[in-house]
Image (cartoon, rainbow, N blue to C red; front, side):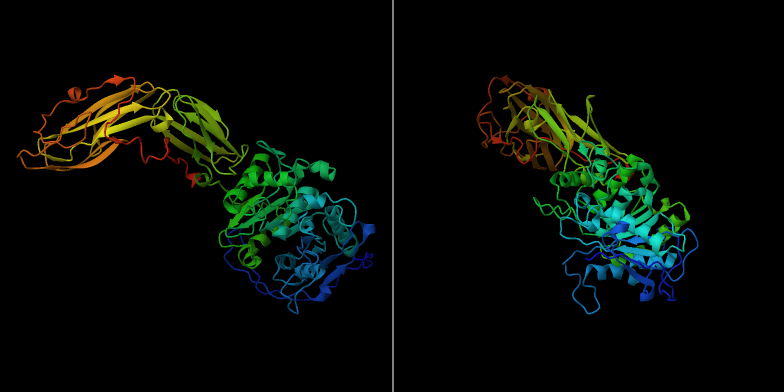
Length: 610
């Protein structure tokens, strides 16, 4: 684009044009009147300002004036354009823009655009820079990392060129008006990234900005988070190296910031669904991996709450809001969020409080945080971890583990060794930097391969009895693992425990147990010895003798016999301990179907966790 110096110094002449569909500003996030502006600015109030390298900017900009200027203070409202050189901008309709300059002009022309509409409603001029986007890596429209690293040529440090444009408009075009040296910014989608990046790079120049369709990926005002170094544009760790000046946290805190996300927005610039490919602006693999780990997958449930928490951690103010009916489409954005955006700008200009525009966003701990473990034997390390590829980093969330035997650990992962077979409870407590808390618990059952590999061999008892008979169940418990174990074998009838016996066994040792229980009334009863045996038996009312089966250690076949005489548990439980397992003892159960030797139960104590 040829460079030409702008010589026009007079302010644009204002002529009358009403705007339909406007609303009276209401309290933040409570507007019920939908706004559907229409109409256009007349060309007489729109000016194309040529590039002026001598004034510090190598590309042109559009400038528009409102029908009526507000009384002081009068800031500029900047709207970022988002169009790429050579990119087909529309379907090719006769009245549609086809170049970057024409696309930028549409931002100041139509009152269906939030920038033009807000400019007209607030009575402040609007500026739209015409920066080209030469390729998909150097996304100048976002002021991303790769753009700031450009050296030489017209595109070097376009953020500074941006500032020079505003200074030129204020001193040259509006020389006869008193325009504030701080400006407001509006941006949607890629332009939203540019809006917040300008505030990070030049906070002393920005009065406030509203950014929608932000993808939940906001530049965090931190240099480090947990184990991660937050390089620009994830954070501000190397900002001085890139720009020559450090991040000014105090000035950035003073900027009014309104981050807007639609609950149904699916435009994801992190693009998790394309593994191994660096999407769009993420040309640096290290920064891209850090971004995924820090922000997480879901724009609404993971990213925006994490950004909100990071701001709280840094002591930086910011308003974060999710609109439940909004997508990435800017049309519904105007209709649903327009009144709030307009009121946010009005309060920013007036120096009033804007804290009511935000929400307290919380992390969905019930979805993003789970417990996972392996199944080692006694004496092996048992590992616990926060599950998922991208759990919230430490620094955003503190993780504290507690075992009911008094041991504890901290961090996203913890390792405990259990030397004895027993029942344990491990609880993970989590707390965010802005006070959200939750707990998750895991109950460890001393069974299966986790604490000595126990096998249960049960001789199936007779399941057809009459009133007055007893069921007699023989079970041989064998430790087939390599470590000593100790667990309790329990006998239940219809869920009520009637007897139990401990089985402390060395590796390779077995113990024979007999459980007996009489039935005094007819019916169907569930008999179980968890986890080895469960069966429903039938007890009939007949008193005539019926064939019975007397189990022996060597056989499970049915034989004719008289009714066994009921005996007490103490005489039935003839237990022996041997140095090797006993073969041929009926059905091998060995925890078939249990799946995992360590089970867990999730629970929630805090209402914020929902």
